[in-house]
Length: 149
Image (cartoon, rainbow, N blue to C red; front, side, top):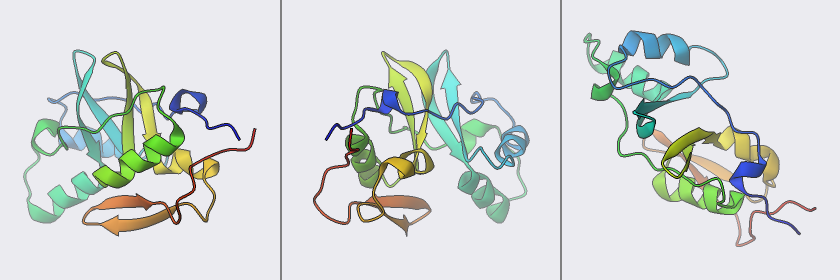
């Protein structure tokens, strides 16, 4: 069995935003069915992430429409393109997140999501549970995340 690394899968490359991006602009981008998170970059470095749930939480609690820096999740859990998919799933589980920006030598390379990982995981090995406002990825047993090669 060969275990794949993050750089072996097709990463989602959503549009990135900056800390000064208006929330309304981020919300318009997140309305697309294929975009559920937007990495926030400053000088090419990932400093935060905005998700659909961040926008829903904002709308539910206030009429204010601040810049993205006020609602983004930060610091952000990231992953290296050389990490294994098993490591990625464990990182998502430990952080309670559904998205991991892929960063190589400080440079943003794409976004890994639970949806991206799903085809590489056995249904018996992946259990997704809501935890607070985040998703949780749990390994149903002690098997490693592997793909037969």
